Image 1 (cartoon, rainbow, N blue to C red):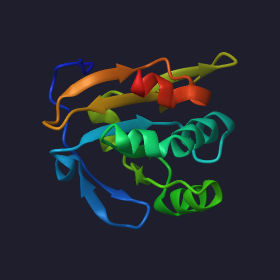
Image 2: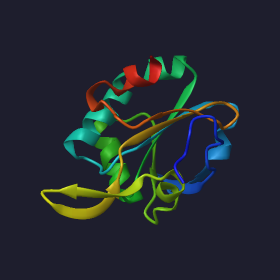
Image 3: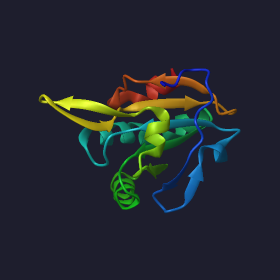
Length: 149
């Protein structure tokens, strides 16, 4: 079942790059940008993450906590964060539980070959844990503008 605006965001428990386990419910009382991206250090994902990094102060001023999530490992996330100086945490969803809860692990197709992968999607979640927006057509180079519009 696809998630819809107005629904409660599925709570989850997962590890961030430091190995610490976090839950979405830890952020109750804060607005959350939860962005799913396919892979660390690839061109589109780097552009998207760096756009959020470059506009991080504006996102904080708007009251958002930013969390990125992919199926990459904690070790991969550490390298990506260090290389790109990302000021926010990245969730290592290696078992795909969070992807499945949010409907972002999907069949994709490239050059006629079908495979499973992450649908680049951003979920905006309010202070009560309700989905206020789902951005499915992500502009990787100007993603912050889509969030703050």
